[in-house]
Image (cartoon, rainbow over all chains, first blue to last red; front, side, top):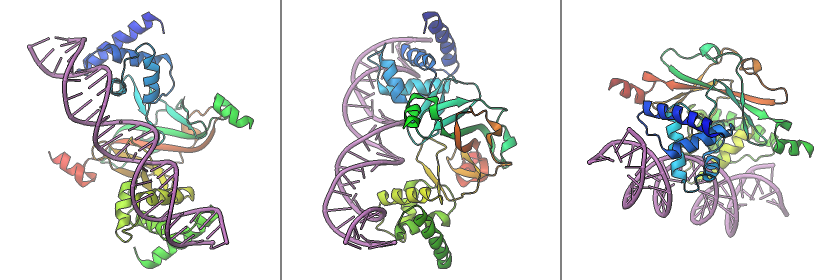
Length: 152
Length: 152
DNA sequence: CTAGGTGCAAAAGGTTTGCGGTTAA
DNA sequence: TTAACCGCAAACCTTTTGCACCTAG
C-alpha cells in the first residue's frame, strides 16, 4: 500500500476513532492498513502475523484491542460463520459470506437486494439491528487448496 | 418427557444412528431426549448440566461426542450466531435464528420462503450446501432477563 | 497531566484428544 | 469378538485480563 493511501486511511481512521472517543495510535493505523492491504478475512492470529512485518514489537493483545477499536468505529466487521476463530472483514458494503467446507476460506458474495425483514417473520416485539446471511458449500477450483483437492 | 415418547425418539434415533454407522447408546438417547425436552438452544455446557440429572456419571467429552453423533445423523444442528459457545438446536425445520444482543438468548424465527439462491449472487463455480440467516437485535420484554433491563 | 493504550504473561473459556476400560452389535 | 464408545484428565486454541509502563490529547 502506498504512503498516500496510508495517509488517507489514517485521516479517515483518525476522525472515526475520535468520533467514538477512541485514540489514534500507530498500532491501530498499522492494523487497519494491514486489513485494507489484503481484503480477505484473516483471523486475529493472521492479522497478528501480517502486522509483525513492519511492526515486529506488536503483541496479540494489542491486535485484539486494535481490531476491537476498528469494529467499534465501523471500519471493520466481525465474521463468525464457523466455530473456528473469528475473522475480520474490512469490506463494509452490505454483502453476504460464503464459507468453503473444504478449505475453510471465506469469500464475499453480493446481495441481490437488502436482506430486509422481507425474508423473515420477525415477531413484533423484536428490534432488529442486523441481518446476516451465510452461505456454506464448496468453492471448488476457486482457490489453490481446493484446486488440489479437485485434482485428486 | 413421557417414557413412550422417549421410546419413540429412541427408535427413530436408533435407525438414524444405524444409517450413519453409529451406535445406539444410552448416553446418546439421554442427550437427545434432553434436547427434545426443552427446545431452546443450549450450549454444550448446558446440555451437560441437564444431562447430569438422570445420568450423573456422564462426562463433558461424552456430551460432545453425543452431540456430534446427533448432528451427523441430522437430528440436531449447530447454531453459531455469536462468538460464544456453540449452541445446539433440535428443531430441524427450516428456520432462521434471532440472537438478542442484551440477553444472548437465541430464538427460532420462521422464514417466509426458503432462503434460496434468490437472495444472493452465488458465483457459478460455488456449490451451495446450506444458507443460514441470523438476525441480531433485542428481544426486549420477550424474556425475563430483558424484562428486567427494560424495567430499569 | 492523565485517561486510555501498549506489551507481556497468566488465566479463562470452550473444545479436542489420548488412553485404559467398557459395551453394543 | 471387536470396533466403537465411555469417562477422565490433560492438552489445545482462541480470547480476555491484570498490571506496570507509556503516550496522545
